[in-house]
Every structure is written in C-alpha cells, then in structure tokens.
Amino acid sequence: MDETAGLDEQGWTTGELVGMPGVESVSYGVVRPGRHDPAGVPMIRAGDVADGTVDESDLVRIAPAVDRQNRRTSVRTDDLLVVLVGRIGDTAIVGPRHHGWNVARSVAVIRFTPAGLTSGINTWIRWWLATPHTRDVLRARSAGAEHATLPLADLKQLRISLPPRHLRTRILHTMGLAEQKIAVNTRIAARATELADAYFDRFAKDADPAHRPEVPIADVCQVIGGTPRKAVTEGTAAIAWAAPREVLNSKIPHLDRTAEITWAPCDMTCAPGTLLVAPRRSEVRTVAAAIPVVPGRGMLALRADGEADRMWLLHELRSRSGELVATAQGEQARAMSRKKFSKFPLPWPTEDVREQFAQVAVPLHARAFAALKENHAIQELVISEMAGHPDGER
Image 1 (cartoon, rainbow, N blue to C red):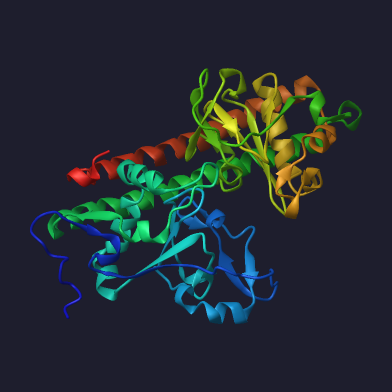
Image 2 (tube, helix red, strand yellow; image 1 turned 90 degrees about the vertical axis):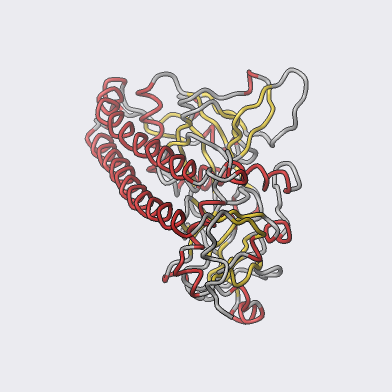
C-alpha cells in the first residue's frame, strides 16, 4: 500500500487522528511503573512536558524490566508526546536525546510512518492540538475538576483537518520559520533572566553585611496559601488558576497565561506582580504573575509592597531554590508549608540597595517578558493560518 495515499487530496479532508494518513499508532504509557530506580530508564510524565520540550529537572526512572514490559511506548526520535492528565493537549517532540526513554500512563505517544514524517504530518498535528478549537474539544471530553483526564480513545477519535498539499506545504514552511523565531526568543529570554540573576549575585555580595539583617519572609511580604480549582458559584468570577506545574515548568520567571480557570470571589484574586512559589523534590521555583491569578493548591502566593521589594524577593528566592525545599511538606515535598515558609529567614538589605538593583533588573525582565509575548503572538498567527477550514475555526 502506498503510504502517501491520502496526503495529496485537492481539498481539505477531515478524519479521526488514529486514521490520519501518516499516523502509525497512538498509545499510552506505563500503568505500573513501580519505585524509582536511580539506574533505570527515564520515564516522561505529564508534568515533564512543558512548552514543547521535555523538562529533565525532576525525572523519575523505571526498572529495566518494567521498561521491557512496556516496549510499545519506548519512544523514538520524532514521536509526538501528548499530555492526557492535567494540562490536556500539551505536546513535545521526542529528540535524539530521549530516544529509548519511556512514558507514564499520563502521556500518549503518537508515532508516524516515514512518509508521515516526510510530509510534515507530525508538525501539523502538533500545531493542530494547540488551536483553541481543539483545546475546547479536549477540555469538553476530559473528566474531573482539578486533574482533568483525557481517555486515550477520545484522543484517537479527535478529528483532524488537513489542507491540500500545496496549502499544507506553505503553512508548514510558516510553522518552521515560526519555530526558529520562537527558539531565538526563548534563548533571549533565558539570557536576560540569567543576566538579572548575575547582577543580583553581585548586589547581594557587595551589600554591607551590617545592613543586611536576616528577617522572616513573612516580615517582607504577605504569604497566601493556594486553593483547588472550584466550579462556578454565586458571587464568583472566572479567574486564571495557576497549577504548581505551570510555575515549575516556566522557562522564565514570568507567568502570563494558565491552562485552566477557577471561579473565585474577587478578594481571592492575586494581582499582577504577585510572586508564585511551587515545590518539587529538589527545588522550589518562584515566578511573577503577569495577570490576575488564583494560586493552585500546594503552592503559595507572595504579595510584596513596591516593585523594588518584589524584584529583590524574586531573585532572593530564586537564589535559595534548594534551601527552600525544607519549607515544603507532604510526599516527596510536593506542597508548600505556609507556616515553615513564612518563618524562613532571608537577608534583607536597605531600601537603597533594593532600589538600585531594581533599576538594573526591571529592564532585563521586561526584555525577557517581551520575548515571551512575541512568542505567543507568533503562535497565534500560525494558528490563524490553520483556521481556513470550519473544523479549525477559533
């Protein structure tokens, strides 16, 4: 059978994902991974898929015997990973570095035929999963409140629209250019953040120890606990809800969008500029919210007075990421203890030092955030290119 059959139609065609020409298989990962094996095979979980890549900072490993029992999801280069639990529909392409790894039950693996890869069907499907129309469909098919789950059968049955080859070739070229620009912007944002961290280290080192008394975190900001997602009730409004993983997976210390919303009274909403803190086994990460947001359960929100205080606190917490694990609680330290965190001591320099640092750091953070915003704009432009068919409408 000609593998390219179905890839050269003259008009738009629509069909289920599992039957798309160029799609070889769709499956999910390990159901019973067992205990973490330090010498085992890396296993990618839903939380490890972030911004189109695999976050390797908190990987777990399965025993080789478990991996052998689950060969169907031993991933290959160019496989497409799709999140089935939590941030439904997030994706990442498997690179050569991840070849031979496995995935958890919370991740689906879409494998393509050689003809499918050559024709760019993997890229098309990855972008299609990011369209607002598809996101709405996946959310509607997911169950649960805080931890939505998409059945594999529903992913397989997801309808995908393909344009004719000449149009698809043009759009795929646009996608390639967009991905190159997004990669450049991501590097710019990372370098700007690293430079701000370096300036902080210098300011912290040069500050007179006599003028840097240690104070509990609660003395320099208001510490607020997180809350689970809630359904609509009288007297509430729809607000962005930040899950801990969105903080942990953020490539720069800014969060300007979330995958989910919650319904909460206005007095529970944290204003832009609020710092969000989330833990995992090896570190505690801190980002600044760029939008009104409600922090998710297991994390904390910090309200500081003034930009200089927020900027210094953000970098002080980033510099003490490993130490702050002691303020987390629960299994594998995956939830913040508000009491412990509030008492954690931080050196706090004079207002003059904080103001001087802010004058340097704020423009660098603005550059990083501008790169992030440009990436979102590029993504929206590409997605709008895909909206030429009724099934792709936003």
